[in-house]
Image (cartoon, rainbow, N blue to C red; front, side, top):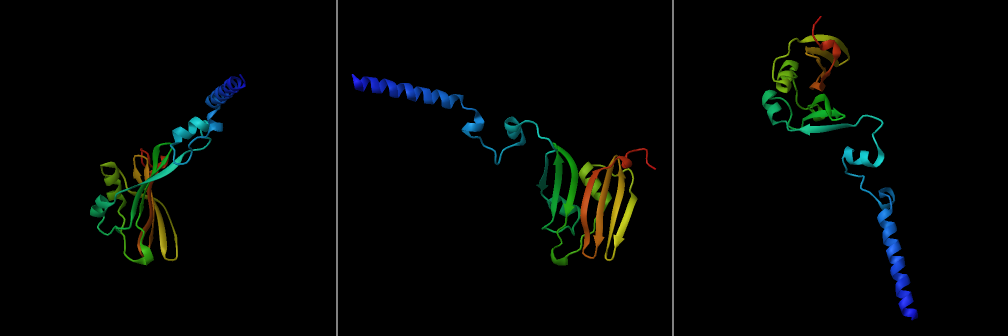
Length: 169
């Protein structure tokens, strides 16, 4: 019967097609890439050749109690490299020169680490017309840098610096 033969051939082709689809590598079958974790992408492409850097923003209500002049539109963020915190930043976002934020490095250190800084020593200072940038050693390997300008403190960050480890000079 020609009809029976046609059905068998169709079933055979359909079975072959399904088995080929099942054996198709994921790269050819399609995969999710956007909006995926680094671990998922590592499964697709292997270990990344460079460091994975990302920044997370945190609430500022507690910081506004610590620093009453910290603007509501300000940001508190931590930058991670290979899933390890590397830099902690305060961005006052003094829009249009409105407001004035006074940074206290010892208070910020204590807020972050839960104890007073062992030292508070300026190790670098530079500036130009209308601004001055400081780098301060706070001890236990932590440094802070910030710029003071007419609207207040800007570009504030805490980070690791070997020169700020004990013994202190």
